[in-house]
Length: 539
Image (cartoon, rainbow, N blue to C red; front, side):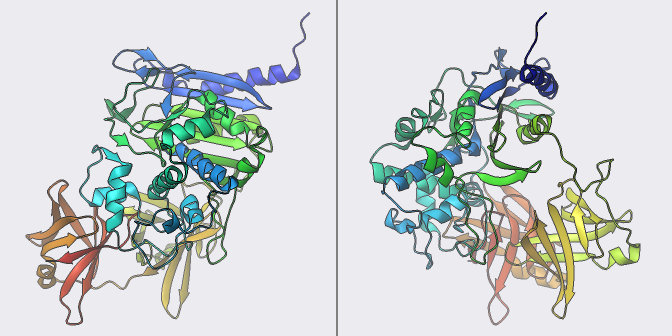
């Protein structure tokens, strides 16, 4: 009679449940990925699914190498941490100490700001798109180093808010190379990957290079399409790894290797914003709570690759998921795996999983209808009633129901428990506060709608040039509609949001018109998310 340890029986149950989450990935002629789970210092699950190459029918294996996207950022951050511990830099050093060629924005930007995404610098992809680059154009650190020199403004005062910024992590490559005198990818291998036993992990700065055992990535747009590889930039992304190597890395958040104790502790540094409110983005990782447990996590996406890693150091549970198709959902899968192992504690939802709501009449809900403007984030949101439910609309094809949990407080359906919208009325008018996990992130003012009138539209027509991105957009009119044109992006229809503010599809976002004291149009500010207030002067 054989007696199996209770832990072995438990692990067997985990394996069955985890394996069932990835049935879709094992369908014929389907990309997939690799999944690794560690508990109590032991790997309890390591499996791969689907194909690494649809063209050649090569299967993924637990040892297949994937591009990890922005999971890379924590390794760049660790490079900075190790240099700080050697006395080569301070987190509070102003970046001009190491990057004197950068423009002077009139306020200090520190390395700590770069690490926390609080620098205010404009981010790579949004900046390049505005300059006319298309999604499949090759881009590199050298390209960023050129275009960053033309910037005259920041998105916001450093330290005042969080806005995800690839630029900051690419500039840290310059800092590391300047201090060490070595190539970033070689230094990372010698100083980070090899000492931590990550033998299959490397930084890739030449996307056309052939490296054995790498997966190919695919977009899912009906059928699968191969993602054209254009990504030649490093620091913010393009580190390649396996689930096994990533589990080795994650295990250091609970039991660090000798000599790495303070380094992994510093990686979890959380600093508040200038006004004292908390920011949960540490040094290249997000430090939050999930299922009631402290979690250190980050996701990544590039081309068709998707990645997610999570460490639950207090429970000694680590999860790494790497995929090679765009509709893979490693973050959601990782949450399901964590629930299997850690259990899912009671939340404030009812047994059906729906948000517990309070009844509000149609008349009460209609008080909040209107168009709202975030003057700092340059965002327009429409709030309106549809089928007796208040809707939060970002665009015609992107809206979320708002479920009342109080007379003026709503939770956003489909966004978990963490997203809350609150309406307030004062002598200054009505405002809408958007909060995530209890922390206000945006404040919108209700806009008083005024009709531009067709006679005003000709004011906007003309050519607009920006020295910051060295390109022009033209605004033209067809019938009573206005549109923008760029030779690489083509025609982009504009929608009038309210007087002197328009919106357009990517890469435009929001267009805000600036007039002189005589009411004549001087130029426009374009904001598209991670770029705010890029100035285009009317020629």
